[in-house]
Image (tube, rainbow, N blue to C red):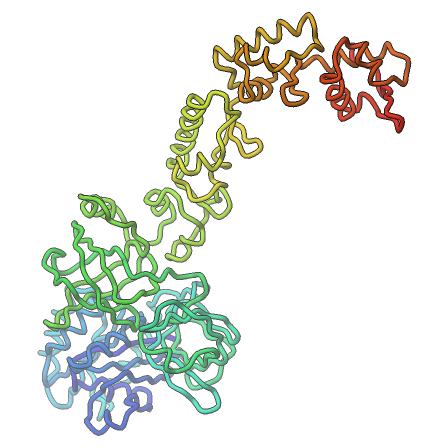
Amino acid sequence: MHVVATAGHVDHGKSTLVRALTGIEPDRWAEERRRGLTIDLGFAWTDLPSGRTVAFVDVPGHERFVTNMLAGVGPVPAALLVVAADEGWMPQSAEHLAALDALGVRHGVLAVTRTDLADPAPAVAQAQAQLAGTGLRESETVEVSAPSGAGLDELRDALDRLVTRLPAAEVDAAVRLWVDRSFTIRGSGTVVTGTLRAGTLRVGDALELAAAGRAGARTVRVRGLQSLGRDRREVAAVARVAVNLRGVDRDHVHRGSALLAPASFHRTDQVDVRIDGDPVAALPTTATIHIGSAAVSARIRPLGAGTARLRLSRPLPLHVGDRALLRDPGRHHIAGAVTVLDPAPPALRHRGAAARRAEVLAGVAGAPDEQCELRRRGLVTRGDLARIGVPVSSAPVAGDWLADPRWWREQCGRLRRQVDSYLAGHPLAGGVPVEVLRRALGLPDRTLVEALVTPPLALADGLVTTPDPGLPGPVGRAVDALRAELATRPFQAPPAVRLADLGLGARELAAAARVGKIIRLADGVVLTPDAPAEAARLLATLSQPFTLSQARQALGTTRRVAVPLLELLDRQGVTRRLPDDRRTLTQNPPR
């Protein structure tokens, strides 16, 4: 299926033309038929000569109903622009064309109607001159009279050629169905309709409902689908579709709401945009932004270079590259075409922040670009990029985190500098706690710090360490003095008073043990690292098994040292403790 929206001035024959093409009455309401004008959106469809199906979204032409018109045109990729031969180009013709151009509609057919009432040539010339400066300048022109049927076959052929030029639908993309109608069917419940521009809907799908006028999103489920008047198990874009929803009352979903693929869209009330049209500095403080079927009030903060920040009256589900239009309803004026540059912009807190932001945005193309987003953001999760519509191919640096390569290298350098700075201020520390580094670097996740640790740095027991931190000069000299004393009496661990005289407290001894200068058998009991091997050699000279007293005498030490030393040898598997508390060597001592 292909979907085409009508556009044009009131009473120029849009609905009459759709009725003649399809045999379906697009005006749904009795009031519309009584007054002879379209008030709300109408829908009809037909098969073209090639067998392709085209569905029409028939929009109102009256200025009072321009919001309804924009709701119908917003999600549609092509347009049938209608101009009456007997009236020619009119104000709403111009506004509808400006809206189509702002929304990026580049495919269309110009139908000059009522050729039975007037010579169409002047109207054709006027309309083609107006189209020449827009994205619809390549539109084919057809002269037609719906009452007589003249030109209808030519119009069908032109529509056939039009739909062959339309870009292929993105059937695998994330679903975002803008709701243009909602109603209740007895026995079925809530039904919504819209134009499915991308993606595929299936019965049973769970979707997020971003409801107009309500905060947050709720989960709903697709109970049934219908397209072109027939029940379907699935509907692929592009298509007109009716969705029967389970899990929501009709009062909770209105025009401007959206059905979304879960975790695929960022709902935001602040967005940075590029505006092509009126100068940004000349825009009103407040205007209306139209996207999809939504119309939302927006406060405009100019940034510079054609860019602005919009603060929306309610959150909208937006992607990078979305097209919208900005309209000043007070002047009945389309102020410009909007391109979404950043649906998740940073706060502007400091003087000059707006100007700096404008400089950044000046280099943004307005299309999803993973590398561009990484350069701008430095660090972002894969899920966050997906929610703003950016496909991801890069491998994460940690967990779900993606990083710009240059930014990541800078963080590696910052980490090394932070480690050096911390150890300079804490010379006895065995390393820097990961959480300290996370806070210092301003990172959101500990796993990022761990991923930044590369040689010569190492990670152990929650500390980032350097390969050989060494000991501060005074501590190193005190430890050397301690080792000199133990060299002649290897098992005579100095008492606490001697350690204090040397200036070796608990922190200093812990640091010396970390760098392998000493071993700590117990609080205040320290020996040199080769003491266990020497002890095993001496114990091997004893008759096996031996008692604690015999071991103490062989080592020339006290119970204060012998007990923890033997327990260390037990843990190392050098000795084995027997049930009667004697011990025996289990292996040959090292030579």
